[in-house]
Image (cartoon, rainbow, N blue to C red):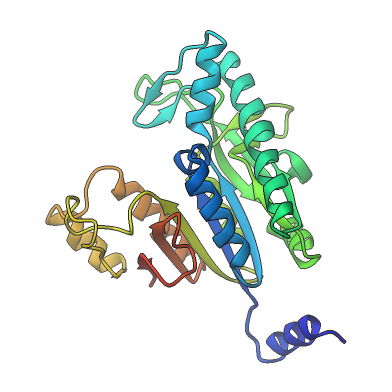
Length: 273
């Protein structure tokens, strides 16, 4: 028996779960060559099992513009008509995803690129019109097949997941990458001790947005509600933290919000119960 198998058996015997790290990287990092190189170096150095979830919105906007397709955003969410759906499918599921997979292979990480349609791994429904806003072909996640992902992961393969899902009726749907990461982490928490890392341009959640060193070390639900009430946490950070707290409520051990160059689990803001 090899060391990895023995370690796995030991975890089962003691009733524990093997660690797994889910890292979400945004489109801003994907577009920045230096930051992307650093992230791939750091991601490759993460020990044990792992999953990478990526965005790519900036690249999609750029290519759509070159094709004469205008981008429309509402509250940071992309309106996805049929023309834009073709663009994001090509960019997210093709250009960005396969570039990341190829570069991870060069780092010695045996990666596979997936959209939600591959292996029927993430199924969603088309977001209904609400408050007069029709997001078009945007999907809200119904389920993630954690067992299917586990088959790949336990075989030594690292999934690289694009922000695309499907409705089971033949239609691909554009889906928020933060949501993909959160829902994937939740589904895998049944099988692993999951850490979810959201990497972005700040060192963590800041108590003072003008001071990059004012990182709040840890946040639970009680602290979150207090910070929102006193205005310390506001704007786009509120839904990000709500997403993180939802993940820990659903069994994810911890969520870390940190710099894309600091995804070793030792930096940033830790969200837990």
